[in-house]
Image (cartoon, rainbow, N blue to C red):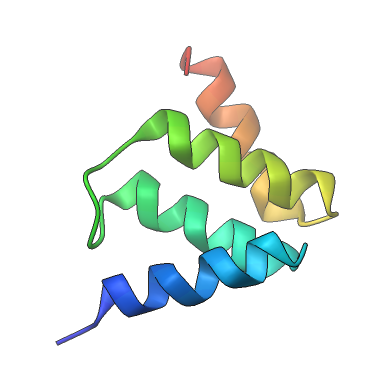
Length: 70
């Protein structure tokens, strides 16, 4: 069984340190609702941070969420 709560904690720490993949993975966790309540607004926020840090997948996901109205 995967421990998404632990992963979320590590990704939050990484994102707070401006690690782009930490922000991206945190966005994915919120997008998929893995260990947290699914929240597209939070996903968009973290994916946007990843994009700002140069993570292309984060940019693509941010754009997709933006186009869907989140």
